[in-house]
Image 1 (tube, rainbow, N blue to C red):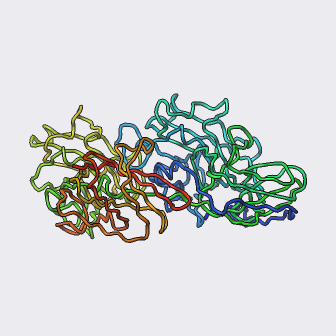
Image 2: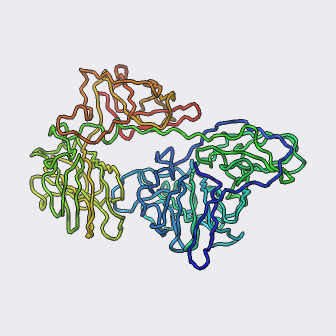
Length: 621
C-alpha cells in the first residue's frame, strides 16, 4: 500500500556532486486532544472510478508498466530514472518544462481502434467529474509559484494535441493543506472538472464527443523529481458517507484528516466543522478547498487501502479515532473470456482443423523481409528490419467466409523501446483470386505498443486505405500481416492469431460463461441477458454463482454450437489459455427467447456492487 510517510529530502553531498533521495518517516509532535473521536464505519466502498469501472485497469495498478506503454503514457520524462517504488509510486524526473502523463491515451487519428483506450472507451463527462491525484515533490513550492503548477487537458478527438474543441484547466497549484512534517512532502489534489475557473478553456462535457483523451501535466519545470501515487476520476457521489463523531473538544473549529501513515501523521485535510461535540459527515457534501474548483477530497478520491482518521482541534491538539484504522475496499472487477472477441468459432480451428497457435512453422504460409524466425513453445520470435516485413497465415488453400469470421485477434510483444518516428505501425492486407495487384485491400495502420498486448479489430468496420466500403466481404484467399514498418532491427514475439465470429447456440443448449474477477471467494455474481449494454432499461436474470464453489459445465450433446477450448483442439497444443484462470457459469437457454443478447454480470462482494457487460453478444437460435 502507498505510504504517506514517504518524504523527499534532497541532500547535496559536498565534494561528491551527488544528489540522493532519502525516505524518512515523519513523527507527529502534536499534543493529544481531550476529545473523543469515533468512526461510523470500519469499511467503505471505493466509489465509482472511471478507469476501474470502464477500462477495467485502475490507474497505477499495472505492475509498474505504464499502459499501453511508456511512450504513450509518460512523456518528457527521463526514462532511465523512471521507477516504481516498493509501495507503488511512480518516481519520475522531468526533462523539459512540460512533462505529461496520459491518464487516458486517445490514440492517433487514421489508425485502427485497438486496446482499452479513449477512442474505444471514452469518458462520460456527465458522470465522471472529480479528478484526484496524489503527488509528492522533492522541494516545497511557494504559494503562487507557477513552476510547480499543473494543468489537466482533455481531447474530444483522436489526436494528442491542443485543439479549439478541446479543454484545459487553469493552473493547479501544489498547495499543501495537510499536516506534513517536511518541506516538499505530498498532497492529494482534487479538481472538479465540471466547475473550472473563469480563465480555464473549454467545457467538460460530452460535446462535440465524449472526451477521448485525458492528460495531466503535473509540473512546469525541467529537472524536477516527483512521484505520483494514484489518480482517480470519479463521480461526485454524496451517498458514500463516513461519519466522524466527536465529544469533549475545546470550542472552535475542528479539522479532520486522513492518513496512510498513522494517527496524527501526514494527514490529508478532508473537512472542517465547529463545535465541542458533533458529527462530521465526510462525503455528504462538497467542502471547498482553496477554490470552488478545488474541493476537499471525498471518500471516493482515495484509492483502496488502509487509512487512519484523526481530528485536530482548535488548540492544535490531535484526537485519534477510537476504531482506527479503517479500510477503503476495492470494487470488484470482472472480465468476460466467453463470450468475447476471442471465444467464438475460429476459422483455423473449425475450417482447417489446425489453429494458428504458432507451435509449428506450418501455421505460416510464407515470410518476406524477416531477418530471422524461430518457433519455440508456441511463440514465434522474429526479427524485422525494413523495408516491408510480412508474413501470411496458412489458409491451406481454403477461402475465408467473411460473413462468418471477422474478429481478428492476435497477441504480440515488441522487444524494444517505442520509436514513434521510426514506423511503429503494423497492418493487415488481404486479397482474392485476382492477386495482390488486382483486388487487394490494405487496412489502415495500427499502432504498435511495447510489451505483450492482445490486439483485436473487427474487419467488417476496420478503416482501410484503398477501399470505399464493404471491404471485408466475399471469400479472401490470402490474409497477410505486416508486423512492423521500422527500419531499425526489432525483435517481435508472436503468440497466436485468431479469426473468429459471434457466439451462437440452439435454444435449449447449455452455454458456459467464462470470466475472471478480482472479487474474493464467497462474493456473488448475478448473470443477466440483455438486448443492449444499458442496465437501466432492463435485463433478465439468468442465475447466480457464489465464487469459490466449483461448477463444471454440463454441455448439451444436442446443441449446435462451437466452443474454442484447448481441451477440444484437434491440432497442436494451443498456448492461448483463454480459460485457464477463469470461473465458469453454465447458462441453460431452454427458457430464453430466440434473439441476440449481451451477457451482463453484477458482482457483489458485500461492500460494493459493480456491473459488467460482454464485448460481443450471443445469438439464441
